[in-house]
Amino acid sequence: MDTKELNEKLLKQMRDEQDHYREWLVSLSPEDILHHAYEYAVREDILASLGWMDLEDNLAQTLLDCDKPLQDIYDRWENLETSYMEIIWDTIQQQAKDAEKLKENDEMTM
Image (cartoon, rainbow, N blue to C red):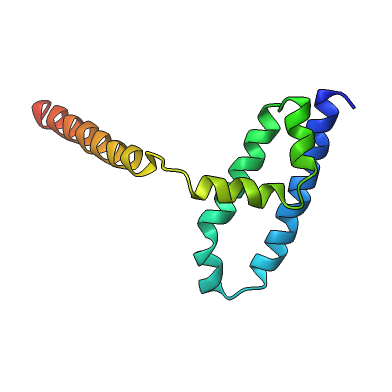
């Protein structure tokens, strides 16, 4: 199998895993579904990322050999220290600053 075929096979395996997760998820109560919404979204992002880029053959094969590669990747992601909340805070501040500038410009043109 070439690189593209290995990655396509891995993506299919992980999509199947996500389909099973989704089937389980929709069987839950609405409150429980909301509790798992972040996990579902991140898992979808993992699939999207894998769809955009190809892993090296040996790495794709290693993940193919795992029982639940998508869950394994999500678990690793969940344990990473990221600057996600800092990025959210920076976005809030920048939006407020931009809105303030627009408000000042509107007041100057009146």
